Picture 1 (cartoon, rainbow, N blue to C red):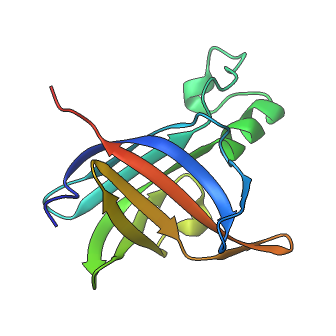
Picture 2 (cartoon, one colour; picture 1 turned 45 degrees about the vertical axis):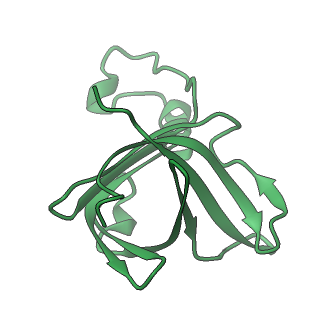
Length: 146
């Protein structure tokens, strides 16, 4: 479990068929993100499209923005936190305490993990998106702590 602890930086995020055919990159070709696992069982993740449009309002921090700006934010940003636990040799659970989308509260996100050198690869369970069953694959690199 110790291998998980620390800060991870996102390297890539792809949606693919089970056979590995890449269908799209949900947050663009060069997304940014941070994943944190703590020794006391908490996790937090933030993912976003790089170079998102800025809000035109000076009050953006309190949620004041044009409808298209707010919609763009929801489409291009993922953030949640909660507890995590390991199961078996390759399964990790993220129990959602807080999420940018309120409907996700309380859910248990199952991820399948593997380590390759200094990378952590997390795959989602297959998800039905349109006519395809797709798996999200996120590649993380351990952040060198200063």
